[in-house]
Structure formats: structure tokens, C-alpha cells
Amino acid sequence: MEQKHSPTASAVKDGPLDIEAVVAQHEAALLRYAARLAGNPVLAQDIVQDAFIRLVRHWRDGAQPSVPLVPWLYRVTHNLAVDYIRHEDRLRQLHARQAQEIAPDVPAGQRRQVERHEALQWTQRFLRELDPAEQQVAILRLQEGRSYKEISEITGRSAGNVGCLLHHAAKHLAEKLKQVGAI
Image 1: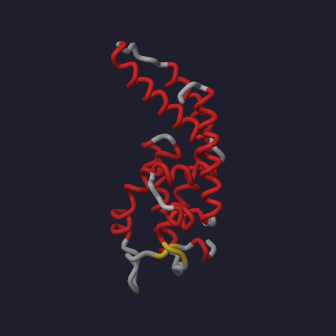
Image 2 (image 1 turned 90 degrees about the horizontal axis):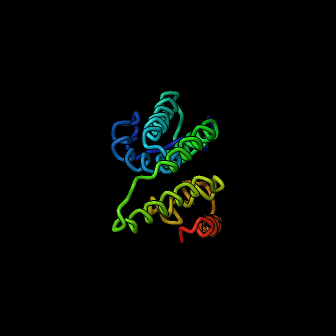
Image 3 (image 1 turned 90 degrees about the vertical axis):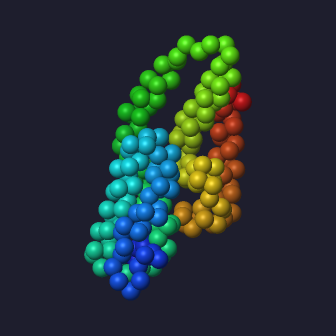
């Protein structure tokens, strides 16, 4: 692996990587991120586990730290999720169509709640259909609450590019949601 992709961590202090400390500190955030990217919390566990396995293998191979740990973990998690999505896209679309066809009978008083839920489902679906770069920054900003600076560090993009991608993502999401009557 190239030097620019090797992680560093505060858990590394002139000694071996304390993987348990790294997992305890970052697992929950990476699971949320991977679940939003993949649209599947169970798959997110596999993705994040693979990311930590790569971290352990990287350190076991004697790599020297050169970039911050958090952006490295997010990049690896993102790349693993994108790889999965590319390989499993057809199956994911089948499940999404099937889930949308199942509509429970809802009393009139709960209609507003159902409409919000449907709008959220449409938003999540359209989020997964965005360009991968737009999807990544949108999830990091809107669902993870990351700052432009943090997104810039995680993605390796400039803060200006992050803003541009977010603008385009929001525009595309709004257009799609208007088309289906969700907004």
C-alpha cells in the first residue's frame, strides 16, 4: 500500500496499534456512515469489520504512519461500500422495489406520518442514486453532521469542491423529490 494511504492514530504511541481503542472510538460513526452508504445496517457491519481488518493488516505489515487515522478509516469504509454497491446493485434495486410495493393499510389519522416516512424513503433512495462523490459528501454533511473541513480531510477534496458537490447533490435531490411529489 502506498504511504499516502497509511493511517496514524492517537492509539499509536511509539508502539503497536491499540486496535481495541481505535474500534471503540470510531466503530459507531463508521457503522452509521457505512449503513447510509450501503442502505443496509447488516452489510455496514461487514464493511466496517473489513475496514478494521485492513487497518490491522496494514499495521502488521510494518507500515509507517503518514496521514490521520479518521480520514483513512472513512476512505477505506467508503471504498468498501462503493465496491459492494457496484457488485450488488441489481440485487439492491430488486429489494428496494419490493420494499416499496409493500404498503400497509393506514388509518386516515396517520396519513401525515406515512407521508413523511415515504418522503424519507424517497430521499434515501435518491441519495443512493447520486454520483458517488456527491453521495459521499451529502451523507457526511447531512447525516453525519461533519464540517466542510472534516469532509475535506476525509475525502481528500478541497472545501470549495465539497461545497460545490453538496450544492449539486441538494439540487438533484430536490428535483427528484419534486418529480415524485414528496416536496
